[in-house]
Image 1 (cartoon, helix red, strand yellow):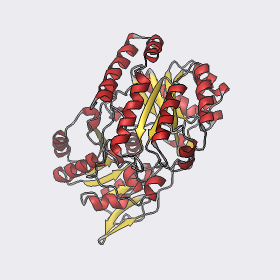
Image 2 (tube, rainbow, N blue to C red):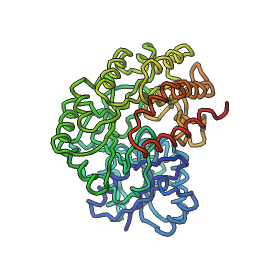
Image 3 (cartoon, one colour):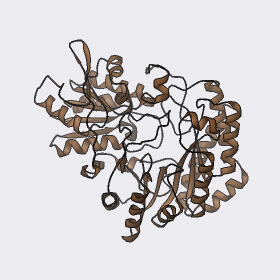
Image 4 (tube, helix red, strand yellow):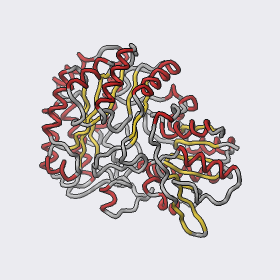
Length: 464
């Protein structure tokens, strides 16, 4: 009896290891349940190739990760599994965690949807299936059909102590095929890790359907152990912390930095956090321990828009954080969004000008997408469907997939043009380009950014 976990095919470049699947895989291994993985994105599989692999492997259970922008691809993967195996089909991830019943209604090939953190739920479900038990109603965190109705059980208990988790089963994945996009990945091999779960902030566009709002974290000692583990086993030279807010607990972040420095762990790393969760002492320790880049969410320069989306900080907080970060010698990336509630052409122009004045090392612009489970999505009483393709929501040349876009006073086409114009105005400044070249420290880094630069340039100029 065997489980096959699948990351669906994607046309996007620069595949990233699906850490959620990797945590599920190690949980199954620890329970003595045979598990294999197909990362169809990283392997470059077509759906035809995936169908052949499914028929050849013929697993007893197929688990498929399902993210909202890739909902259509995940549903095609469900169809492929149903047509080529006799397996029980389980979906999990952000989308089914937000709208489990909807997923089951959309595709009769799905047997179960896992809701929330799936490590315990999937192990219990697999044991029930292998033992031939028909009644799964006692398993928390599940949606399934019973007597013509869709049953949803109580949400599974979140993992409170992340130190008890084994490191994700990276050994089951094609680690040499993962390549992130600029600005990350200037060193290679590159890898990602997550050291905390849950975010207590209330940004209205964000879905927390898997990890929820309660912040939980690994101890600094466990973080250090995992970093050493992946350095030893995979020769990693650069890490990116995929935590929502790496410095949520600033004392913990300082201790992680102190341990890296004290034990002479030679690693280049980056992270994402909020502008109100840093101070000079922390930033200096981050720099000393190998941090070279921090990505900050900014979203808008309009105070009214920031209040509407409940960011909880002001543009003055943004200026302060960027000034401090630059002063200690850490590079910065600014995340901006267009089309937020209350957005106008005037506020968009103000945000574009703010990005130029702030002058981070990198910017990333995105169009506001409506993700199931987010307060913004829920407030509009929408129904997500794989056939709805109202436009690319990433605002990036590296993206793939589709999402519902929040269209209020501005149309999708207008928002797309604002994103491209914002990138053109930022990246095509002669002085910016000159400064950027002087910051490059290796030939590999030069090639990495040159390739990314050309890709971004072609994307910005497309359709002009």
